[in-house]
Image 1 (cartoon, rainbow, N blue to C red):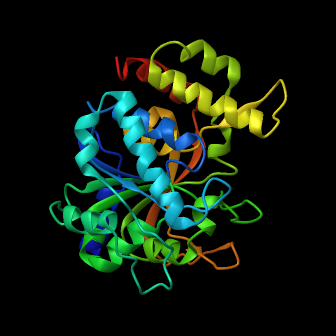
Image 2 (cartoon, rainbow, N blue to C red):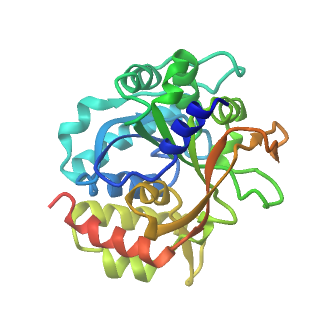
Length: 309
């Protein structure tokens, strides 16, 4: 990598210090944490100006396939915007990919991927568009394949994969579309990775905390509490439980250095056997290795009750 290109990449890997433009790519109906992350983003618009929201594909027990997961996520985004009193953003909600990448060279066109490819070209290497991704990377990889030049115009903050020293990389956001992971992490774009098991798994909340800080504060807060408690009942969690609210941390990275610790590392290589490999000659990325759990939850619990009032 040329010295000038490396300097620009390192600049885009620095945490922003002022208000910035943000898009969110989310598999919102997948479980319960995306709803918290979207709400946290909406409650932080003094620092993070929301420009677009993208529905990502997913496939688990809550969908019949990636296309159904994406559509359910699209509808869930609209529902949350109503609860949050942010209906003005409905016009910038875009459906994403209906399938995963067929290979590393073929995008899956969608309104979301096409919007990101177009929108990011309006930014510059010096003042990038911030892309928060909390699902499979299909939409992001498709946008990069449609318009490779956006790699120098975005900073991607992704919740996905496991810690590099975890025994495997069998993590939901990563294993659904390994081709997309490889496209994104090999593109030369500025990437901040928040790994799940071994790092963000520490960001857990209990039922009593949810009831203390959110229940009864607003219709949105009541909805968030019920989502978690219903999920815990479904999984027979028992009387004493905590639940990771993973996706909030990706938004939190943009909001200040007090919430987590990170470092620069060479970009990892995602393998199809769900492990990482490493090459120290690869371009740098930023790796989050510790979450300040209490500080981030305090900020979340302070902001959410103010949303939708």
